[in-house]
Image (cartoon, rainbow, N blue to C red; front, side):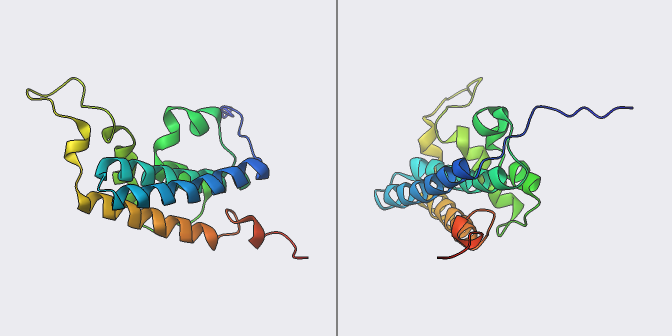
Length: 157
């Protein structure tokens, strides 16, 4: 039988550059929030840093669909990275933990448990330190990966 092509995949080096710059900015914000003891917010921005690194790579390799870029499929870090064919510098479990944090840092569980609590109460300094550490490794990986860092694949002056 015929294989469905699926939604179109978009490649764009210029948008990849924007995603890469966003990744570095999100890591900076995650570190500032860690210093300010804003644990859940730090974890969220660490997740965003990793997501932007991966999307920068996707925009230069396999491309992204609209839903992967801005929709529901765009926050599963493991599946996004797998699409690139690149090897993750961090364990799958670390990426999955950050993927969960995309929603869990900001929204209470629904339907609510017997005693709902604010989502940020579930995050500790350890979670924030781990999140920033994973994001730092991913950004450093990006700096050394030509599918992310544009200066590695462009001819010098």
